[in-house]
Length: 135
Image (cartoon, rainbow, N blue to C red; front, side, top):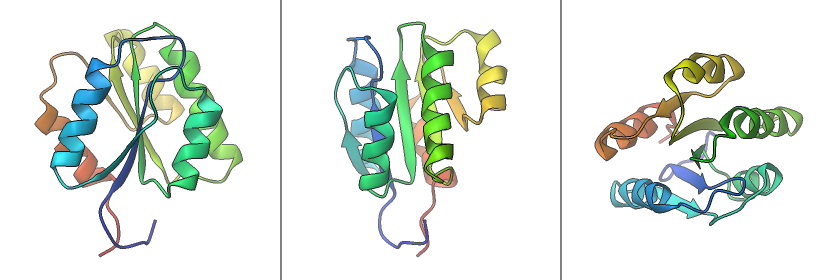
């Protein structure tokens, strides 16, 4: 970070899950709040997500996962960020993630998890407060 300008967020759908409505809703809410959003589309690999985040100088990565592979996919993204010395990029996510998995995900380094029914304003406020760019 340390770059001025709007917060830049990569919103991604990793894995085989083809349901992207929630990702698009969050992407639009972040964009409408003045952030720059890069939506990667469906069926991204963790490597593609991390490559995009680094190339786009992203401040945060938002993963939408409904497939049940959240433990594996979040861990892989965080491992790749660690390997690329890019852990300053905050990772958050949402989707169908059981309550019992949220604490272990946070222990891995996921900054926040938003479950179904979370108002978009809550996610926007969290990103604004936690992915700040220098003015």
